[in-house]
Image 1 (tube, helix red, strand yellow):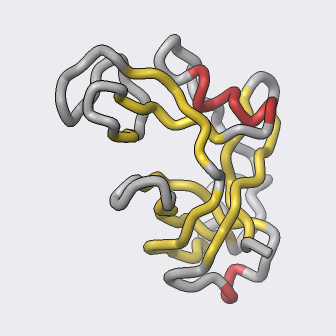
Image 2: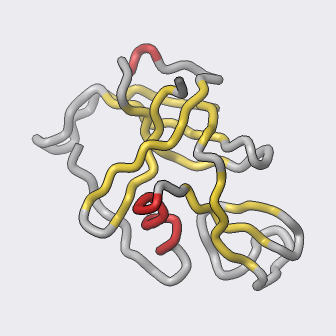
Length: 132
C-alpha cells in the first residue's frame, strides 16, 4: 500500500522509528504515570514536561474498525482495514492503524492483535496483525 510518510520531529521520532529495534514506543509521563498518544513534549493529563517514550508490549485489541473499498490511488490495494487499536498497558490508550495479514472480512471487534512494523525509508509504521 502506498503511504504518505509522517514528518519526523523531536517529539514523534521515537514513535516512528522504534520499529527499527522491534519496539512500539509510546510517550509516558513519569509525573502522573500515564501513557499518551500522539507524542507531545507535555503530558496532556497533568501538564508535566517529565515525559519520554517508553516501550510497550506491542499487543492490543481492535476497538473499532472499517473495511475500506475505496481505491484512493492506483497503487492502493483494496479492501483494507483501518482500525482503532487499544493497548493493554492502560485503559483508553488507543491509536489508529491498519490490520494486515488476514482477510479484511475476518477482522472483528475485540480481536487480539500484535504490532508488525513496515519499514519505508526512515520510518517504521506500526501496523497490526492477528495475534497468534
